Image (cartoon, rainbow, N blue to C red):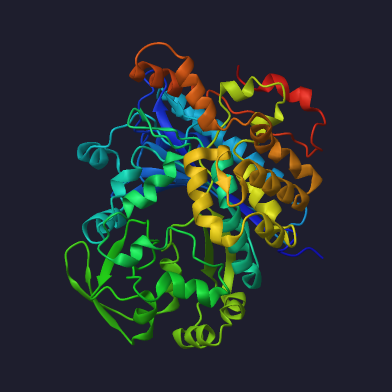
Length: 523
């Protein structure tokens, strides 16, 4: 019988830098949602508009939510969920079909506005001023709180720093092991998908400059604990109790709470609790006073486990455990489970979904240069490769132990920095990042179904050529003529998607019928 270990649920969140097709400048894409809504209604899809203060800022359907990340120059599509033990015939190929359809539609709708998706994980020439930040920023109340109260430099991400975030379902009892595995593999994913060597019109000396966002964003926080949870822990997590104490205990001041049924990135009311307690301290209290952020009005909040669910985003490392309660346990039951280190059993009973969210891979897409390659599976696999790596690793027993022999945990932080700066040319502890990344791809391949392994064509291509997106961008910049600004403009325009390559349906083994795909990519 199929189970979550062999047939996990699958999804992905794709962030996309949006650029002007002519000038290459960062593009405000808020008008695209009306076009997307109209297109989906015409084909009969049951969709609803996503509104903020009466303004259309997204389109939600049964398996795809197309919206905005932090700014209107950085779109985000949440795609899935597919698969799971109730659908053992479903696989990453089903998710790939949804991704291909979503990207095809967005590229077409953006094209009507003279815009497109750039194959970069950060816009290379966008100076961030306060005026630009305020004009481009998505209208989410949490961002004012982060800047004004917590001292975060949220503007650091407003040049469309974009990631590819796979989500892979996991049993509660396996969640921490899967999280540790994702964190250990993160330097390989950072290196393989490095795609941001420029910032504000200058070369940065980093292959994946995107990930410098966290040290900048948390450079001078109001609460010292905010500097900690964007880095891997000093040792692997032991269990869910360890993970929750790390994220929500000690000096970790809790985030503002949503009042009513809305997520932390929603558009409803938020309240700050008096004294900014750690969430675990807040949950222990019978009630807690606070103030509504919008107008300072006093509120009194009765803690419950939905508050834990609301604030589960409160760490910004390369992977997170995400969950949704069906029926929330009582606060008393939670603290009993926490003290007895049996949170896994409690979550197994109460969670209707639980998954790993990967955050290490930068955004990569199939631009014309990739579509020109002889092997059509390389461009076809670009956007799906992080999902294939995460699923394959998770479904391959003992991959953590084998990878740990190559990269000891104590070398994880330095290896991550090496990946950000040097890509595949960096070091992973005692070995090269290229060798470690190759081992990660091999381990993932062993955990995938044969019909899913074509999705590793892009990372295999990167390893074979030694050329990541960042390396190709640097080379294109050096080849171009003209001044720096003109060369960057050409780089952005050349990297922009004009169409999206197909996925190899029906499911097939790597290499079968490959020539039939060759003509489908844009030259």
